[in-house]
Image (cartoon, rainbow over all chains, first blue to last red; front, side):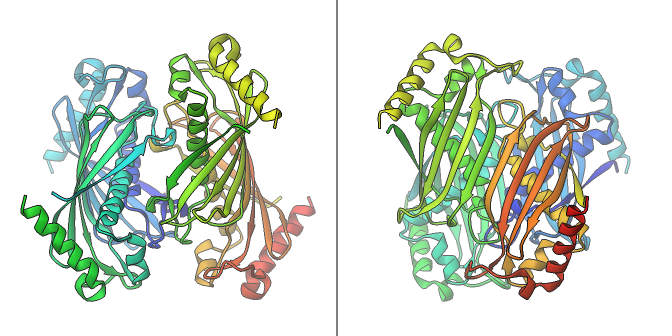
Length: 143
Length: 143
Length: 143
Length: 143
């Protein structure tokens, strides 16, 4: 399975008065994971935006199993659940330095025109990205 | 239905380079909604913590329908989907000043001891909160 | 003296594991104060951006005297220290619900073209804003 | 001169609708720099807290010279300007991958008791930290 890993040192700013990482920050770490996934495919999200597209989140879900804390070094594993030319679904696992699972998540994204927010086919706008995502999906399904 | 409303003016800091509110910030607005819901019941979350409890998020989900933007005034509607003595489920709607639905969400929380993170029955620790939540739920079901 | 006031309820997300508001968040509250100041003059920052300008921070300073906490209701007072057609200097006071001073601050901004980040004279680009700021400054100096 | 370096990949969440990193986020990067500085001395801030101390920011200043952007890899250089047993002053430089200076900063911290926020002498509470900071300062002055 093609999955990307990103390492994150927990920042003091990411904690709250419960003494653990504030839950919304895991969604930011998911984004760090997506960036790492795109880089593993040879791309960078900023190139997508330079090409006139953005890929906003349309649905997101997270399950919190174990809190991450300041001082922890976190690993975010990101892989593709599905891609159909318009819609991406990513899955995430957030683990701490003892390999304990902290959070799992899933996000759905669509490609839209940067100015109008109207749906766009990745295949037409950025054909190389399209091929790379199709390839990643096939590799995935072959597992 | 007992539901609380919180008003939020979008902050510049909450936008991203897509020109809209960054998605993780809606989860922070859900929290503002929960705080308003507790206040509508006559309580404040900080009293729960003073009583030795915290109510961390164990699961969260959000669907993004329409972006909120800097300059918007947002309304977060929050209500209780369920409460069984240990676990709360809240529902959220985020609307803009034109009453357009921007985001819907749902979060699941459990009561735990502040130091040990072990589950606690709200009934025993904070009986008045327990009664208020049971009351809110009944009112809800009566709708 | 012309000064604007903005009210802010401290969010749980704004605390850190020290049990108080994380220091960088006061800078976001300063921005909420600036927005309120512009609204007191009859403008909105988003209109400036629609006019092709932005006013980035070029220097900022804050002194922390007393921590704000979750549960507090904060008042941000904002006024103009100087304005010379290109550069704005704002001053801030952050007070809690007991009127205790928590933080003071000062920020310097310049007007630049949104695309090129080259300096722009507000007088030429947005003459009404220019006049309002000159007026605010005179009122200030008259105190 | 003893200085620590921390590398940071700019996160999408850190941008705002100006298309650049939101200014308050540089203060969070300064904190990442301080953590790296403490680690270069052989310590971790979380050990200080475990010892019953915290070191809140009492004054902070930043000058913004050039915006950092999503896609940039940032280097934060942190060094000690002064330390007198109670008060630390750190200096910061934030540079991009082309070694261009983006932001400079300075923060003042004091050691306080975690519960009471009353000043504490580091020498008494954490003598090893005290010695390391005195050593760092001497090395600094010897330059």
